[in-house]
Image (cartoon, rainbow, N blue to C red; front, side, top):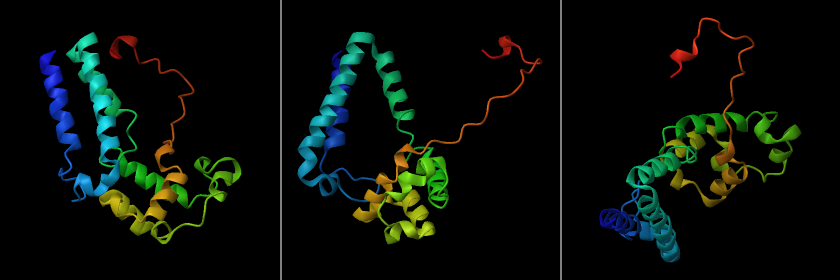
Length: 173
């Protein structure tokens, strides 16, 4: 357990280092400002839970849990492999008022404020979201969150209408 605690502390120190350089070129202290202490407390709580999971259920469980949490529910985060397709889908949906993401009859979309300039120019929006989303003006970022960028669900293909008799259950696993 000493190794897991050591690792959790090392990760915590790296994550909350005020001088840590972030992907956009800013330092953590520049972004976090007065919220750095709250961020540090949050990171400590999460990593404490991770270390406790390692102690209670073993290191393999803790690693798998962290990987699953980072890879599954966080698909809408910048920097993940699914971010580019989410951006493309979202930007396309903005021009489809009848899309289900806009709510029944487009009511969710109609409740939004008018689009800020950075959102209205779709090519600039797509490029900014893909390369440097931290450069969005606050009004544009808030509008995108209100429009549900993090909640866009991909289209799910329909289930087949008939069973394929050439497939055996043995080949599935």
